[in-house]
Image 1 (cartoon, rainbow, N blue to C red):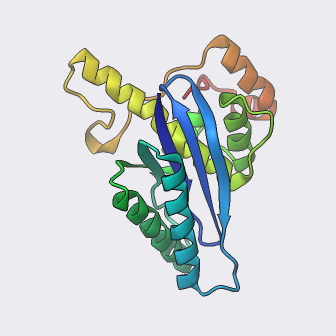
Image 2: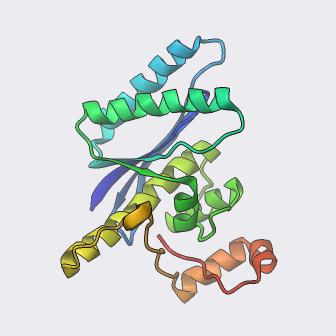
Length: 211
């Protein structure tokens, strides 16, 4: 089992999620949200986020860190702030000499929900299902757990390719990744029950896919 720390960055709320995983089965070790008051200066918020992320790393000793890539935003100011928070998170991981893996929102949602444009409540529900939780995590914590689960899948794919001796990697030319494997019938049934309206709306051949 490997321990992965997923981070969902935000200038007001930064989610974190720690899981133990073998690539197919995962369990939650810890998750939560680091809140930075709007009364603090932005520099003080960065300091608080960095300090608490450092404490999470020290407490849970992850083997790797997974973080969401910067995404396009029409609000340039918000995008810049998000980039600065990501910089703090990357710095803390680098200071701990941890491998860092970055995934786009599309990759994360596709890996966890099977649909790249999934909404936040759908990500929360799938995180609950995949990790066999008896509660729905807060949005930011669920997003962080989804990042960790996404890495669990792709690291497993990387290991399979390495064992097969293909010389390929999980990221193909152009930074693309292979599609996640299809869900089992039991898991697909759970997803269909969780999102009946989404299944009806899409009504296409695309299968839900597993982490």
